[in-house]
Amino acid sequence: MEIKLHANATTTPRIRRYLQESDKSDRELAKELGISVTTVRRWRNREQTGDRHTTPHVIYKAMRPEQITVVNALRDTLHAPLDELLFMVNEGLGIPVSRATLNRYLRPAHQREKPGPQGVRALKNGHMPDTLTLHYRRLSMTMDDGGEHHLLWARESVSGWCSARVFSGMSLPLVKTWLDETLACCPADIQCLETEAIKWFAIEIPGLIVIRKPELTPVAITFTENLSTLIPAAVEPDTLVRRLCELWNTGKAQKKLGECTPQAFLEALRR
Image 1 (tube, rainbow, N blue to C red):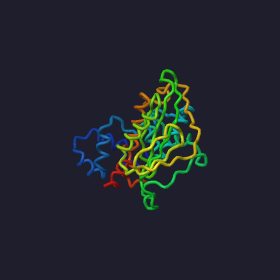
Image 2: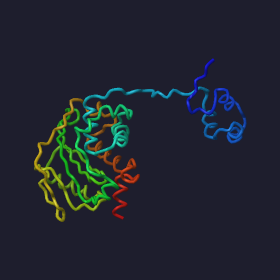
Image 3: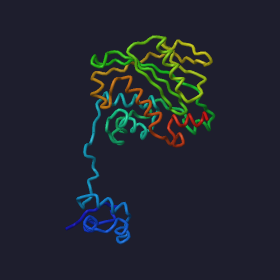
Image 4: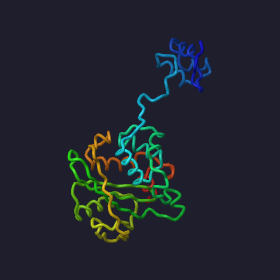
């Protein structure tokens, strides 16, 4: 009978059964058969002697249109490469998609704003992490999720460090309080603010330069389904975006930041 083994297999079903039935130690068996101790332990801890299927148990081939919108908005906000975005979608949003599936639903490069240099390359080009860019979007949610909300987020472009909040109402004092809290927790030495020229950012911060870009009509993000239906990891909207920021800032080291997280990258520069 023909036996099909994995291309990198170092054992046969007969050897695997011998490993499972032997009373010898792992090291003795490894030396006897010329295989690693890890391989010996792997097969001694299994009941079967055949290779496992490499196909995922659950295959997600499609995403809802609104999930695609959320994922692309997340990518545009973070300027995240594919691997870092996959981490955020799987761990942050709780949407278990593969790398290939995620890539299939991303907008083509020519339809997205091209980010400037980041991380180590930005430092070599003379860019310093001293500017926060502020953004605002209105969120139109279902009544079960509380109706209209307001998203505020700030991003430092060299490291990609982000801070965001979602509020059910808006006022200038609230925006000022949010910005003070953001500046206090940002590990960079911020000297300048870049804002969209909208009424919610008509504030002055002593000691900081404020640059207002030409006014753009804020695009409302509309949800026709409950947030929990679209995002398995969803909780209350403000809690969700704060968790996403924490995960992005401290959860995964990035190659362009010298294998540091955004938080660690800025803290190292400040030291």
